[in-house]
Image (cartoon, rainbow, N blue to C red; front, side, top):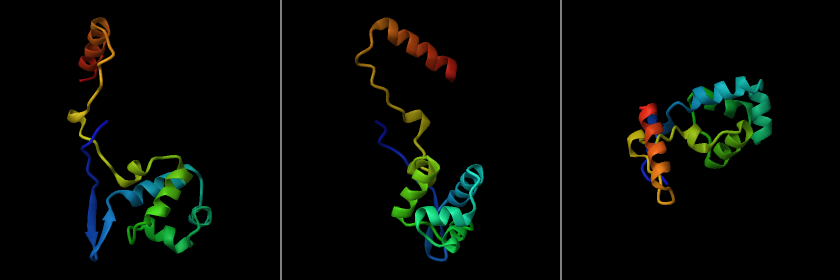
Amino acid sequence: MLSHFHVCYIEKRSIYMIYGLSKKLTLLRQQHKMSQSEVARRIGVSSSAVSAYEADETSPTLENLVKLANLFHVSTDYLLGVEYPRDKAILDTSGLNKQQLTVLQNLIDIMK
């Protein structure tokens, strides 16, 4: 399990906004061929709230963030912009034999 991550956010008018959320929500809504009104109806908020999310004027509540993630079949980590350091990944190899470890190391070397 990875234990280090960070969330990118910006401060706008003394409100902390989730960096990149507006673009992700707009793209997901368009990919799912939904209007802002449809998204609003499905998560139980006003159309103006969805418009504000997409315009970076406000961020959804935690409850609404979860509803959006479920609606678009993505993780809340994705919506929040959680990034795990690529060079800090941990892999439990305790159950692998020497041959399996060699194959794994070769795969890692190929992906570098």
